[in-house]
Image 1 (cartoon, rainbow, N blue to C red):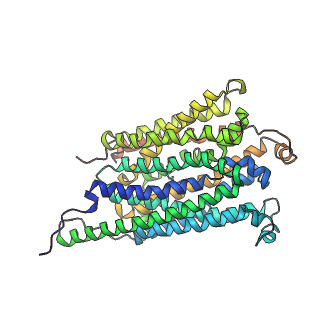
Image 2: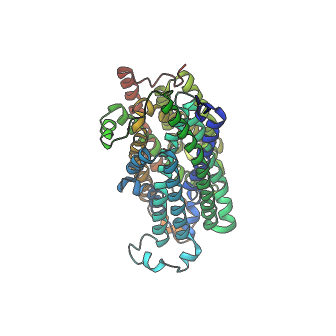
Image 3: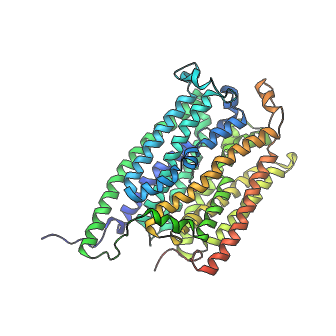
Length: 470
Ligand SMILES: NCCCC[C@H](N)C(=O)NCC(=O)O
């Protein structure tokens, strides 16, 4: 007799949380790689001649193909068509390939005249060949990491919809933040031992392990799909999933509320991720610290977010209030960036810097914890992958342009400093203008958060309501 299945892996909490850990482990190493060079801006300026604008351009290159080649939009469509497990593998491969190219660009072998060195240094000579190769690699890595982000979000909805969705998303982000903490501690340590190549080399190796973790997830996902299919065939699962059509994308682009959420996302994140790239340099300059000390101090930023994001996720699952949290998160961000920008040097102590970093970490948990689980309330499940990828795409435009803008603003507001550093003088950049720009993004995000709350009240999407259906 064939046993009839009434439940799926989704109904087992052990299986559900194991699937989450597998997905989140890859994001842990991916987020490590994103910021592997972030604490090393000073070292890169002396070893590879990367001035702040070069450093900013390399940081922004992560998003280049996603934005200009519309890769992220395709990634969402591909995801909605081929499903979570296959998209996870594609994204994992892209990350490993891109990271390997970036590693080659900054390697001693390349910079001692290795393959391609002459070619990459033969044009646009103001931008080092090492930075050009690093940009190509980071742009490919960027396709992988953003596709992984969309895939993991859809994967979590697949396993946790109607259950602990915001908590699961919060935990996934917490694990990713732990990766940022780890890299701010590990990268300067490794760079001191074996140069920037060792830091990036270890990051690349970890990504390979992340690809294997996605490989293990593949089998979990396959089993869940087989069980869900069996339930459908037996008639226990009533709602047959509708097929995704490209024309469905129109519903996303024409949703005003969705576009407001996307606007808020780009403004908020433009003042967070690009800030991470410049924070070590800013703290070195403002507190007169070494790279390693400044990087260790900044590592508390993701730690605050790591602890709070799952707790806030739990709160949103059970009590709601996501739209209000978006407002509070934007407000806290403005205050912190203004502290970095405007506190006079004599008052900008270690304690003030640490407090502002921790409060910024709180802001960095309030917004992601409330923003990402709100997306399924705004769009149909069949276009969810595309919806996440469109938000990420809009966000990526900001993440690409902001480091370029900040690098340029830093150089322009400090005339002559790059030349003095190149000549070996111990001078520091002044970060006031870049920090004011970050605060400006926060102000715009706050205004949109107010508007979103009003829209939700009028249209009733339930952004302030709990996720758990009792
Ligand atoms: N360089 C940052 C990559 C992560 C961007 C990604 N699109 C995202 O927003 N993830 C959610 C998060 O809060 O980390």
